[in-house]
Image (cartoon, rainbow, N blue to C red; front, top):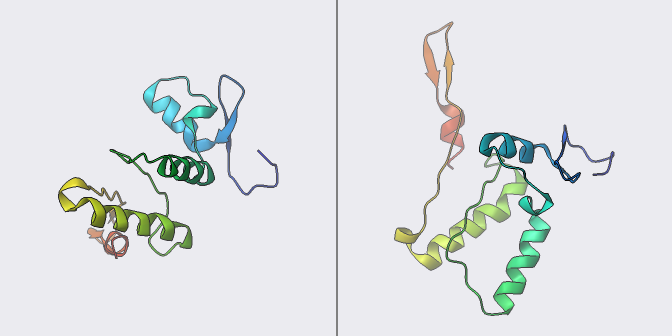
Length: 121
């Protein structure tokens, strides 16, 4: 990875491949040795999907994790894709899971849910 990239940490697999630090979290969580083939970029995903689509293939299962907030411009492509998949496959064939932090403020004894409410606009 370029030292000029604005990443906070680089993860190096046991095979010597450099990747985003989230791959390290996945490796520790699953207790598996991951390789460069365990990580895919948005560009790589688009290239693969477009090639398969041109070859006439259709996906049966799509699992996507998007690490952004609703207002982030990076999330727009994923949000639109999810919307289109839901429309094409029908609501009975699509699931969206939203995980969010719910903060508890000990000083006032309250749970703050506004960030969670904003995450599902």
